[in-house]
Image (cartoon, rainbow, N blue to C red; front, side, top):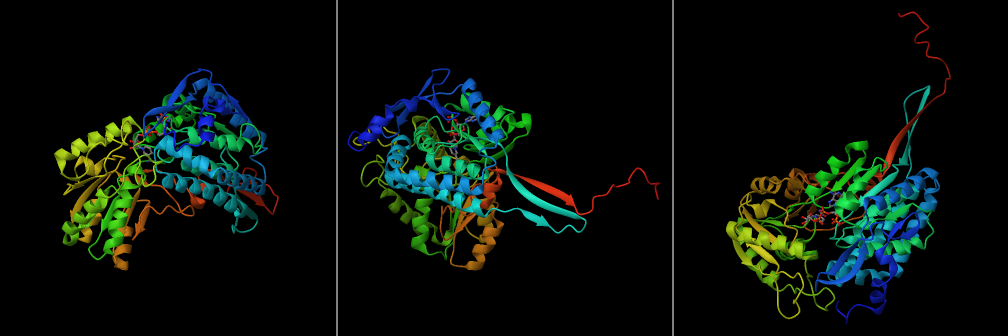
Length: 508
Ligand code: NDP
């Protein structure tokens, strides 16, 4: 561990008892298996903590607790005002402990302190947003004609299993818990085995807010031992998952037992399209931000950069200059702009794709693991650019999930649309142009869930987030994200209480 930069509070906390436990039914519990998972600092690959690894028995205990808590109605039938007030308290508490969360996230994920701070602030904003909108949530009355009256109400779904990845550990926990709790569900959160620490701290904070036992549960552990039992259980009413597309497909298959609701936020290979008439400096700046922020470990990373041929040569030159200036280093170090990859496995994967890229296209910058002073044992890699990439090449089709950019030239608007849509994924896209009509045309033609015009990676809590095609099912954030945690019930009444006489009258 970086002794200089981690506060003494965090050092003590990492050795505290809750780290090894699971939070089930309002208590910190030992895992039945007594197994541990080693958690590492990606900047040094040193073990920083050993967390409990849930077995199927532990997960079943969490499901039982969540089921009872839901059925008791204490939370699920509480007023929107009570739930809103609780969510605001969660936001207040995270804010009060902001620096702790920032440090833990950088220590566990590797991202820079600036990136971690953005995530923690995003988590606070998510709890506040759902606290606000649940107060205003209403049903509807339909004009169906007398004698009938029809009203539509929304109810919580029930027990929600929430499985999250390692790239935005706290933020993803907030995206899952805030709308689910706002709607009155009970939750079982399964963080990535690689990055469980901010979730543990979050649950310590949630514990102080006196929620009824069983409303929130935390099961740290592996995908197979902790994730899969959640997905397979007939007592779980909904699974919300963020992670890789292959895992998402398995989750759909394993959840058919009780036809539970499934929402999936999966991978991407998003196109960022730069037209010659774009504001050049803005487009250049966003092109680097789109792929290299969070070390490229972003589902919506602008990993396919499409540049119009008339500016291609100069744009690529300037892109390389800008990329070479990015300072890679320990996320705790002042001045670091890009941290290490999350673990050795991810580093290996990214290096393998760089090797593939060398066969398929021209390596224009980067491509190497960083070793030597400051990088000794961590998972550091240079921001990497491949140019003149064939749109059908593997590095242009497959999600690398690292700081590797593929640059593809195009001539016309129609060609740009064709290339951008030629992907199994459909999460997001960027469009840079000074021509408003062209921006609208391209934005409309792209088969993706989110488009950004003259900007990139603006993640607005108020709007829907999710993908077309193999990038997922369902939406998070906004009112759309709340709907994913609610059942819709139509209640029909009549103003005229009378028999139908269907079987007692002669047929006409
Ligand atoms: P996964 O999709 O494997 O993991 C995401 C979450 O699902 C983790 O909590 C994981 O557990 C859990 N999980 C894994 N298998 C199962 C299962 N059978 N049933 C239930 N839950 C399961 O992503 P990885 O972390 O392994 O990364 C693999 C690739 O996925 C990355 O290289 C990247 O391409 C992509 N990815 C995409 C993300 C996105 O936001 N779109 C986010 C993260 C990864 P655990 O990790 O604890 O084993």
